[in-house]
Length: 336
Image 1 (cartoon, rainbow, N blue to C red):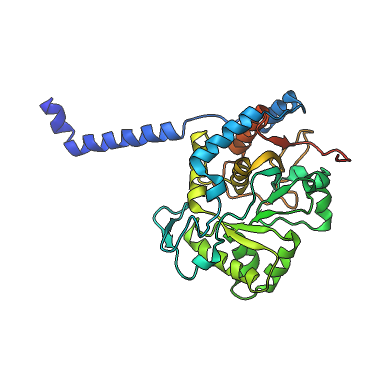
Image 2 (cartoon, helix red, strand yellow; image 1 turned 135 degrees about the horizontal axis):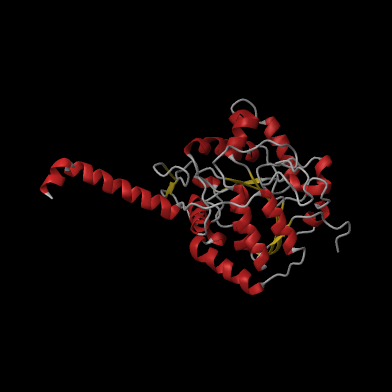
């Protein structure tokens, strides 16, 4: 034993022990697995067929899980009620940074959650290319509450497929930076572009990452100063962090969840019935034809940031369980 210890000093043994701990932690949290291919996913969807039935028991069960972990009705947005003066908001995307609610920001928060519950029939509209030529616009607009992702285009060429009605639309600070130069020089194009979303709430993760706070606050003031029909809601970082943990416990491995999955989680917590559109992250459709990444372009996301196929499989499982309805085919020409 003494010979071994002399040959391998204590520091080296400690180093190997630490490495083993790291490896075990990684394997436990990020197990080796194989995602199905696009073709296998298509075969699975086709094998399941178009039949779907809502399972009220499964809906209540998942809503209870979301309520226990994340309190969506109370915590989805920053309000004066859940974030009083002096409260420290820890950024959910940058764990060593925080923002203290002060005299400048507190008045920007609504007093309490603005939505009236329960919301009946909700549609969450992703931006997937599967929506092209789907004719789902009228069906989406027939919903009681419509959520959209990342300021998508709703011009006339798309409305037959994606509709026009909007009650809540997300706006990531990165969009404010890229499309509107962080609102440092002009507000006009931003304010004009927002008119297509009508009297909606603009849901912004102002306190997810530190660089996104100032652009989000500028967006708030740009709309408020002109009396815009839209009202900005700031996503509560506690809620976003809780939702992130919820899905990672269920097997999603990603640096960050997609905006779409955050919105679906919100809808499942707020709505009695949830239907989702445009959630198809694969380049091949059910008819084996090419599908663009978005219904309006084919710009791909940064590699390794989101785990869209994993998210799809989780949502597809909820579809099969009757928790939500995932629309993956064209919509009927006439909606009752």
